[in-house]
Image (tube, rainbow, N blue to C red; front, side, top):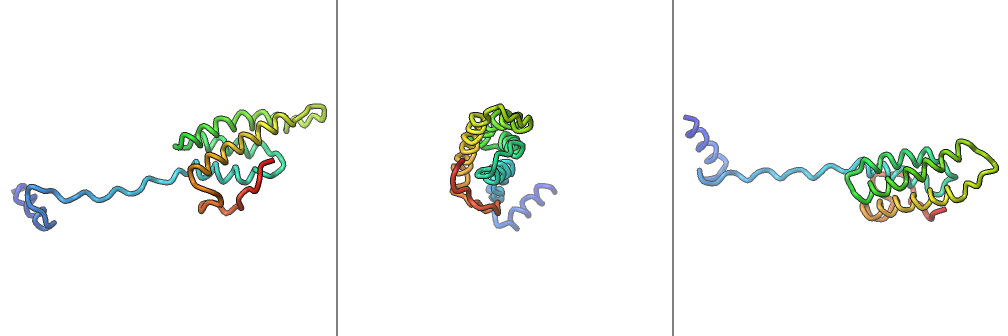
Length: 136
């Protein structure tokens, strides 16, 4: 009885008993929301006065990305943002923040380059912010 039902189902589907219906196409893979978020956040931080806490958030999201380039750039951005953030919080006028902020800017540019490699030139469809015009 089960075999008869299986053959009937195949015949109704327009197939012979020896060929099964083609499987439905799998949906496209989901977008990398972590990469999208990291790229959006880094475009917000580039060109602004240093605000390392925002860059730390971008780095955290980038590290969660499935894209190896975004993830690696996030791993470089995280320590640079932490070091700049420590100086930013201390706000010691006797400390030269320039080298730390330069490393932060380089790491931001690295993440932006990884984003451009993955998504093309900004502005990207998932962000409403204007494309950064230049680094610091």
